[in-house]
Length: 227
Image (cartoon, rainbow, N blue to C red):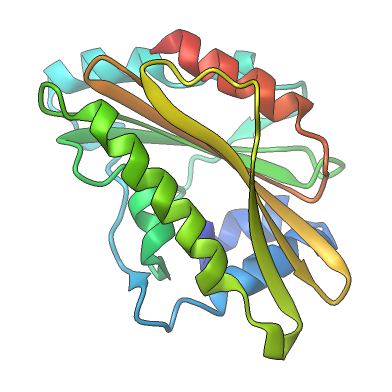
């Protein structure tokens, strides 16, 4: 994650946003842990498509389903950098999640929280061939869980674990879970939400150094409502 992703952040899911928005020790450690996996066999150099590359029909379908600033807490901004949603260099298991692998068209948006919040959000909305969207949920959840194992490096004092976030609706199929990365006694959190309705799916990744999930749960609910 440039994060992570940003995968990007991730590895980079975006180094710039990480530097700008992740002013916290916890998120910087998260970025470092993710970056450490970029050279592994699970790395990926794929890039999330943006709305500018979508044909008119797909743009008309997917763009209205994206989050807007009005859906986020006060003080957030949109990351307008050209590579804001790039998963270049991110671990493959996370890149596939952010890119909503196997979808036929996708669009992403990235938001940066105020410096006091040290957080950011990436959303991808994608469309699948008829009848295939729900089936993608199990694979994406597996991707997320497998990344915790690949990101853990006990010999370097880093660990990653995934716990489910209960009580968050995901439509026809999906999951909500938190990845907690610990390094040197500091923690970073990556909350992931994947939801499906019909042939459309949405992924929301929330990066923060706060253990609170209240804002994330509200954003997830809003993303589902937009599907």
